[in-house]
Structures are given as C-alpha cells and as structure tokens.
Image 1: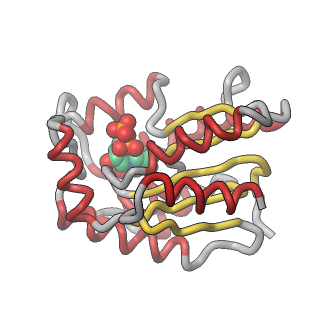
Image 2: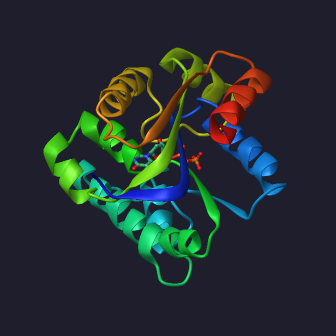
Length: 201
Ligand code: TYD
C-alpha cells in the first residue's frame, strides 16, 4: 500500500476551472467543526515565488528546470519543519491544498517524461482528491473574463492535453485514495453540495 496523508484534501483542475472557489468554500464550511488550513501550490515560499516569475514570463528557464522547481517547492511545502503540511497534519489539523503533485503529472506531463516526473514527485498521496472537471474552452473564457495577463499554460491546446493527463492519473490511483470528480459546468452551489456530501460521508 502507498503512503497516504490522512486528513489531507487536494483540489485539482485546470486554470480557470473554479477549483480555488470550491477550496475556499469547503474551508469555510469545515472551519465550523475543525481546525483547518487552506494552502496552495505553487506556494508563497521562495521556490514557489520563483515558479510564479517563470509563469509570468519574468524569468525564462527550461520546462525541465520548471518541473524540478515545482517538485522542490512541494518538498518544502510538505516537509518544512516549521510550517510543512506533514507537521500540520501531525498536530491534528485538516489541510486543504489548491493543487498538489497531480498537477505536476498533468501539466509537466505534456512536455516531460512521465516516469521521470513520477520519480521526482514520489510524495505521499493525499487522502482525498477533488477534481473540478471543467472543459478547456470554458476555462480559457473565464481566464480571459478576469482580464488578467495570460500565464505560461493558459492556452486551449495545452489545457486539453493537461485534462487528458489528469484523467489518466486519476484512473490509476492507488487503493485507499478517496477520489471525487465534479462536473465543473454545474453551478457553484451544486458543486459545493456534492463536495460537502463526499467529505462528510
Ligand atoms: P494556479 O493554481 O493557477 O495558481 P493561481 O491560481 O495562484 O494562479 O497555478 C499556477 C499554474 O501552475 C497553473 O497554470 C498550473 C501550474 N502548475 C503546474 O504546471 N505544475 C504544478 O505542479 C503546479 C502545482 C501548478
């Protein structure tokens, strides 16, 4: 059996899928009954900040270096002795993360060797995965609607490949991981209700 981080909930989805909204809503609801921390990858820590500079085209590097940066950011996110996820879980907290290593397999999997990515991301699985499955064209529309600068991966052809990779990863999860796919075209309230039913079961 694989190592599984109990009490760790991960939201995944394409850019613009609505996953961050659902992660925040779940956090708000869980807060009433337990100690919960909402976090995200890339993180705000030094390596995560470097990743964001690459995404905003402020720093140029290779796709291989970027894959390694995501994995390094994740190692710190998980195992930092002061604020790492493992420590928070050990203290009895519930941790929700907006993205985790499944994103690396899906996004970096478009350009990098899948087995290599699995190796550099051989981190423990989360107990829960909630995949907000929104089609790539709706995601691009939402990103454009926000009026923000497009980031590195915000192209429809790329996101379509990422979605396929996500599905491949989630079709092959080890036993024990609790997985929910949510139809991202449903309204926000309906999605939240489905997620709540799943988590509180
Ligand atoms: P995103 O969740 O969109 O962050 P924010 O909402 O703060 O902008 O993540 C930023 C981008 O990074 C997004 O395009 C997905 C990509 N990404 C990867 O390619 N690999 C990874 O391992 C992670 C965590 C994110």
